[in-house]
Amino acid sequence: MKSFKIAILMDPLETVHIDKDTTFALALEAQERGHEIWFVHINDLMMRDTAPCCYARKIQFKRADPCFEWLAPQEALPLDSFDYILVRKDPPFDERYFFATHFLSLCRSALVVNRPASLREAPEKIYSLNFSAVMPQTLITCHGDEIRQFMHDVGGEIIVKPLNRCGGAGVIYLHTADKNFNSLIEMSTNEGEEYIMAQRYLPEIRQGDKRVILINGKAEGAILRVPTGDEHRGNIHVGGSVIYSELTVRDQWLVDQIGPKLKEDGLYLVGLDIIGDYITEINVTSPTGIQEIKNLGGLDIAKIFWDRLPDFK
Image 1 (cartoon, rainbow, N blue to C red):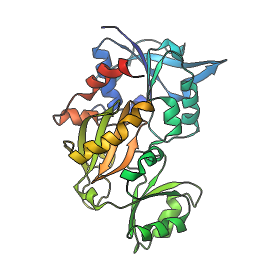
Image 2: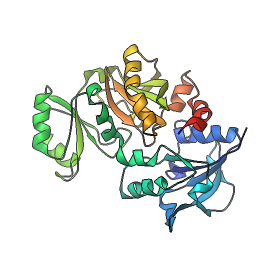
Image 3: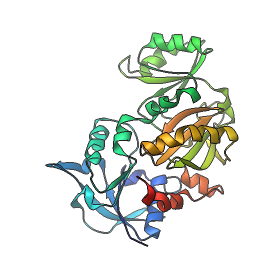
Image 4: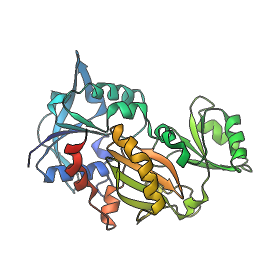
């Protein structure tokens, strides 16, 4: 088996949760195959004339505390010295991330996963609007009066989400009788200065929010994240319980609607969120869930990812 040199652009190593982190699982599987893993922080990307470069450090991951050890000092390297570059930086999609996608887009031989131009042009909550026919009614705005009218138009209950966060952070449930509506919208929109996404509330969330992992447009496994108590979010990061889930006929149909577009856009590793009959988000920056799927009896998606990686275009 050929050995590859792989850079992983990711958050600080202190944030890795070895039992849940998808990046960690992908790195372990790559190591099992004899590949070299190099850690890159977003601040360590740079341009030298027309060549995208970085400071990178060879690393080995392990299921221990700490979960890694350095194998060599940090080096300045051209990005094209790597065979593959995995972009696994969590939101927010800020100025650093924006410029990082431009640097990564200039790679000539290294394959960047996911495609940086698509990450830049299609932040996950925006990208899902390509498939509005299979989404709940949705509004993106920074105007409180628009949000209130939208809530009235869709039946009096909505979910409001920030555009540039993940893991359920900043997601709130609002209804017409909510006395704190104005204050909550002011906080969510930073007093009208930041965009939010509002969606019609789907009561099916009580049965769970399904996360489907897609590799190159094909569904490979799913979990159901069920809210606890009065919580309206099923996300693992906010305490949702997790059970294994098969895909329903409707789920597979939804996957079939988006799969070809994902492949076309070079979005090779994607987390699709489904509530009831609707797609609510398409997560493309650093989707997670593959450890939970495997631990609950599903496929080993890390193996599938590396098996298929040479076929990505």
